[in-house]
Length: 216
Image (cartoon, rainbow, N blue to C red; front, side):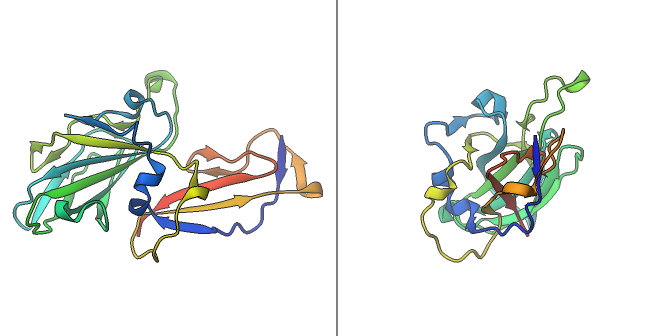
C-alpha cells in the first residue's frame, strides 16, 4: 500500500446541503413511513440519512427527544410553508448522550418542519455491537408526543461534479468537495491507511475525493 504527502488540500466547491437535496438523493429511494426507519431498512450502509416530519409548535420553545440515534443527529427546523429552503440550525444529539434538545418556536402560521440529518460515523461490529444499526432507532418526540408521518432521504455524495451552479452560501450545513493526488517519489509503502475523514478512509494512490458536511 502506498503513502504520500498530500500537502494542503484546497476545497474547490461548496453548496448548501438543503439546496442540493434533489440532486444528491435518489427519488426512487426516498421513503415515507409512519415511524423512522434505520439505514439498513433502506438498503443504506454508510453516509447520511435525512429525516423529515412536522409538528405544531407551542409556547416559546419545544423539547425534542431522540432516545436512540446512531451516530450523530444535526437538527434543523423551518416553517412548513417555506419548504426545505433556509432551515434554522437547532443543535445536535449524539449517540452517547441521551440529552434532549430545546428548539425555538418559529411562530409559524402553519406547522413546523423538522429535519434530522443523521450521520453514520463508522462501524465497530464486534461483541455486543455485532449488529450496529445506523440512523434513528427509537420514536422521536416533541414535548412528549411521538411524531409520525416521516419522509427519509438517503444522501449520496457520488455525483458532486454534476451539481448546478447555485447562489452564494449564507447558511449551514454545507457540502465541500475536493480531490487530492500524489505522484512519483512522494509515494511510500505502508501497511496501514494513513488518511481518514470521519472514519472514512481515503486510499486511492492516484486520486481521492473528499466530502464533508458541517454546520456553524
